[in-house]
Amino acid sequence: MTIAKAVYQRVLLKLSGEALAKQGDYGIDPDAADFIARKIKAIRHLDVQVAVVIGGGNLWRGEIGQKRGMDRSTADHMGMIATVMNGLALRDALERNQVETRVQTAIEMNAVAEPYIRLRAIRHLERGRVVILAGGTGNPFFTTDSAAALRASEIEADILIKATKVNGVYDKDPKKHGDAVRYDKLTFQQVLEAHLNVMDMTAFTICQENNIPILVLDFWHGEDLLRGICGDSSVGTLITSS
Image 1 (cartoon, one colour):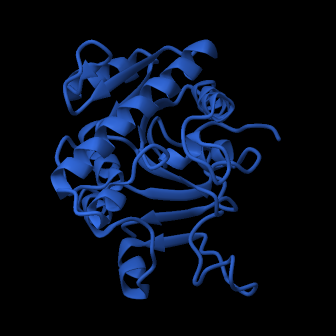
Image 2 (cartoon, rainbow, N blue to C red):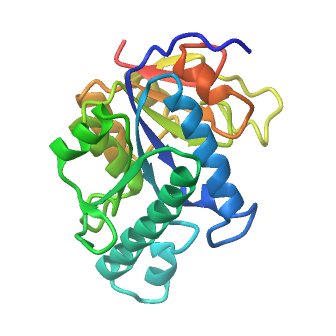
């Protein structure tokens, strides 16, 4: 396809930790990291500023520890550290694809990454660097969805893109129902009224209160990410205030 001009200048891309693992597996797959890096590089070619928040579910899931009696704070902090490991792996893949990248963490790890400083993150973005924002919010009891919404607000992102394996938000599970209908566009209020599962409530509320649009799309399908950033309404579901 002929790529049009991007309609967003600064985006925050939310990826699950599982994106770095092989299908149905755990750990970090270098090929998966390279695939993601090439997708992000294509966005940068549109002169779009890119920040990334990535989960840690491919390495550790806090609920597993909790089910075995682990303290919730300890389990969550382990999850935050897992996101830093993923961030470093993704930075390596991006740098190997000639994309200048910085990792900033909410939990200080000065030997491997910068501490998260809002204005420094914005300066990196303005200079064309991809910024990976790891370590969640730095606090337990918050998901990486919430961290993504918080960081999107802080860096004044034009949109939060939630990368999934489904092309948008449907009225029911498209994997179970062949007649499921995809929404091209929704308002925050419509999502709440229909009880649609987009993000956890804390993350969703942060986006709603700060008027940050959410674009849910299939990150792995063709050029959907590029098309979504260029405003193609046939890709994903756009959620806005009105």
